[in-house]
Image 1: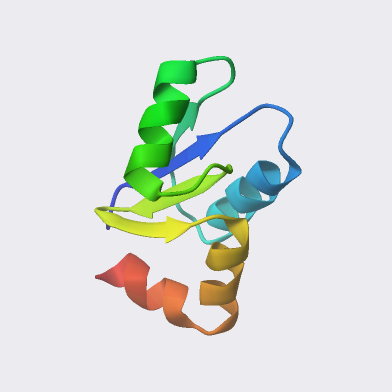
Image 2 (image 1 turned 135 degrees about the vertical axis):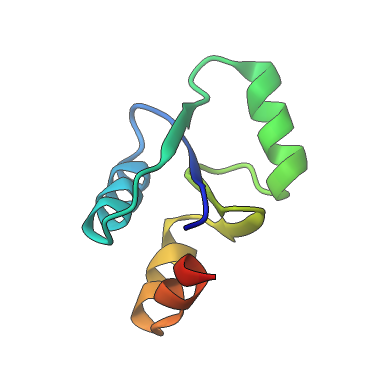
Length: 84
């Protein structure tokens, strides 16, 4: 199973929703908080091309944010990505 990484902040409702969905799928994940860490936040923008959290990776595949994760789940694609 692919390693899951999720970059979050403490006050982000979408981060909570994404973590809940990942947990519902039975996935464990490495949570990387970016609160107040401006260097890490800049690095996240470079890696993802986005300024928002959460940002989620399954292995080396960048999923995107919560809306992207939820869409993959609704389309039945998340299970396929998890299995690969």
